[in-house]
Image (cartoon, rainbow, N blue to C red):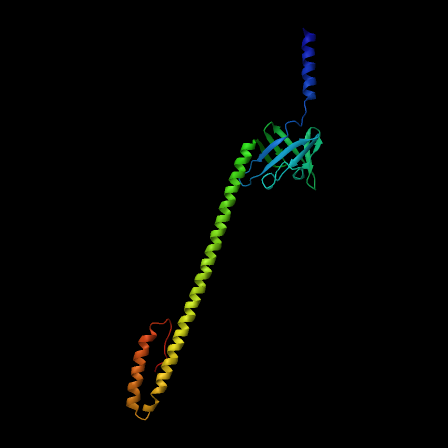
Length: 208
């Protein structure tokens, strides 16, 4: 009986030792961060474990090999070098992956589709907001342009009126010898064009 139990323990120990410590790595992993959407993928090909950190960024097929970088096997864990040090990918549970200070949860392909749909919607909203801002700036530019055109038109009309006033005042020089007659004609011109000038913005004839 004791031998049978020892045999069972040996079989269990050998089974545990033969278990591949890397077999739980492959799959899709979603970063647990409310402020940043990120999905990474780990896969195995010909005994080599590969990591893709651009699952959400790549528009082409993420299964293409050029999206993946090789991972190193170190004492039952996968790792990569970020140029400064080795970063280990630690499996704390079957569905939890720790990469440096970041935590990831295993997800299905359906969840990946949901995330992509969410990001696509956000991108559409961003583009729509950007387009509205462009249209609003264009409307503002056109409004300013129209306002300037109207001001220029008012100045031109006012100048034309002032020129007409000067012509009429020059026309009563014939009455200069008769001061009362000239004054009467001048007052007629003044009264007439003072009223007309009120139709234009900031148009003030220089009458005395």
